[in-house]
Amino acid sequence: MALCLATLLNALAVSSVNMALPELVAGLQTTYSRAQWVIVAFMIFLTAALAVAGRASDQVGRKKIFIHGVLIFTLANLLCVFSQNIWMLVLFRALQGIGAAMSTGVAMAIASDVLPKSRLGRAVGLLGSVSALGTGSGPVLGGLLLEIASWQAIFLIQVPLGILIYFLGLKYLPDDRTGANSPKGARALNILSAFCIFSATLFYTLSIKPVNDYYGLLNIVSIVFAGVSLWLLWRLRFKGHRVSPIALAFTHYPLTINLGTNFLVAASVMSSLVVGPFYLTLALGLDFSLAGFVMSAGSFTVAICSTVTGRIVDRFKSRATVLFGLLCLILGALGMVYLRVSHGVGGYLLCTATMAVGYGTYLSANNAFTMSNAGEQVRGSISGLLNLFRNLGLLTGAALMSMVFASVADFPQVSTSDYGLVVQGLNRVYALALLFLLTAFVAQGLSILLSRFKNHTS
Image: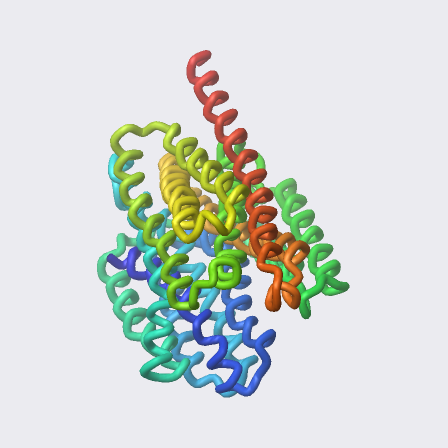
């Protein structure tokens, strides 16, 4: 319950605030572009802190990282309520993202510690289902609270739930099992390594976010700093640093494949959030409430499939489940490439549902198999890495898909006459998503074949 509620709360923190952007513009007397940083700051610091939180949990204990993360998240929510201007709110949202990373990044690791391998699949599937439910119900909850109260209510309602999770975690989570104490020099390297991981992720996510709707010098400087941070992190590996998360990610072949496909799949599924609202409202002529309902159907489909897949993985323990999920994603994306207005809402829903089934199946199976093969000393790091690469994929997908869509659909023209550009933009975006998914399918297929070959020869 503690892990599921924390996962739900973090998903709500991402999706419910989107509905409040117009209210933030009016209430804090700011611009829409500045208000968007309320969303961006949370996602950037959540992503940047995930691998660090996972690694820290291996060193100082997962329970300690989890409950302190919930405490930081809850305190940040309370501070958001009393924000007097947009930049105060952005600062507290960044703090909220760090707290969310500390609790979310170790959830699968704690589940792996507590449960036997025979039940790990359903636990990971349940966490995925709760996350999808939070993502799908966030806009509904946010809209309801805005109808009866102000934007502060969206943050205030999360405070008592955070307090409940804190005490549940404090009482019921297993005691910390930490690694051996490191020498003073190794501790310094660990701190420097954590700083490099955080800065590399932070600067990368800043580099893919356009400033004032175009890329410029800030993006170039950010990607350079990200590269320098990664280079320094790699160098630390040769100076006595035992196992850094990034080194682990790129030196263990099966883990590298699983993390890479997490990135590609997340970037692909971001397509629906980028182009879906435009296609449904402009091309199909739906009102906003009906379009929101159509889009939320995918999240609830993912929730159902994640739970079912977790049980299937526990029972059959076949990595073919991962390939099945990717195959469904490919079929759904292929349908979107050839989607036309004449296919109506039914055609869009069919393609979306197919991709949602694939995403729920793939994510649950891939995460379950990865965590089941993780050693106790690195479970926190691997749990953080799985979430990190997924979030990096979502952020990269949002930037890439938006760029592809905007290159085709000229919005001033679309708003007046030619909705065909929206359809063409949707087809192009999903063509790129299809390329990502085919790459992920080939990589996972080769990984499975190589693993079976090694087992056969041994």
